Length: 378
Image (tube, rainbow, N blue to C red; front, side):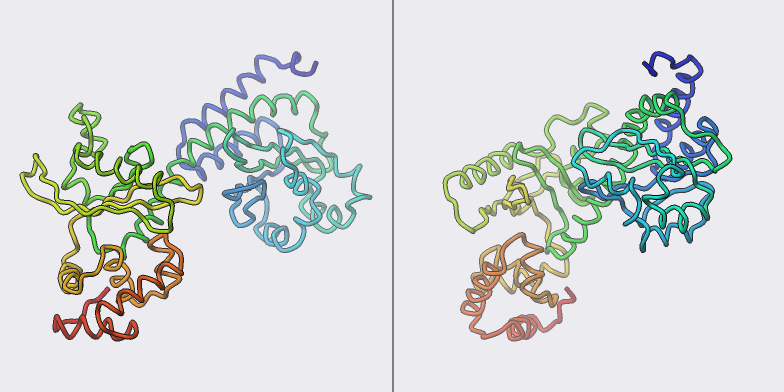
């Protein structure tokens, strides 16, 4: 077997490349260094790496790192030639091979346009593609290329690449985790910006904290990683909150309707010796797993609005609808922000109009402004 012919030098090359990848936490910097090493180890003329899309086996044609390839070729590949690339077509399969080697001179008859018009101007004659895939998802493809005057990739080189692939996939996945978290936090922050609260905490169905913003640590300092590492952390939230959460989760299993279970209660924080109103409600993700949204400390500008709205006897959910309505959001946008259907938004609006004795959203904003004598910049 070819693997049995792997030498100690080949293994050192694998350790050098994988070790370098593990040391670098930024995905772009990591792949850039890896491409430099691959060029030396596999004696390539040029090479590149296409990141995968967030789902499926498609490549993100807008996100690529390269060595020795002009940018115009990536534009041409994106606009047209990816449809002719036999390697790209492999990605449509449910499971892609780890490494594929191809001598384009033997296949140029079948892919004559792709070879003559796209590969030949780049002096790409031999190609080895290394598919990086973890247990969770497809990560991308490394493309290594050699010119016509070079020898093709040998079975031994393919075997070395097969050994190297899982190490590179693991290193890249570790580097992508912080990047994904930053994106997720930015999305959550953008959604929660419109909520009338400063403090936000999200718990999963196991009552584990999966997200909190900076203001939440003012009232619950045990949320911070620093306190956990110093041994101060015991439980980030008080027992009463967990009991309220369990009660809401129990309501979901008993009552199956379109309403989102919620609870409004007052909590005395032992560390700050202050009372805090807590708004707790259930939100549902795409996988139908319940999440618990914990909100507290109304924003200063929204506090006045909340006081005005409560005089009309609106529910907590209806108050949230009014806050977003005042900002000018459409019914579709409100449903997206509150994780409820547009039909539910319309029902809330009907109830709001009736309680406030108005007929449309414009009159809602006008009524509140007249009552408070100020305009609320939401």
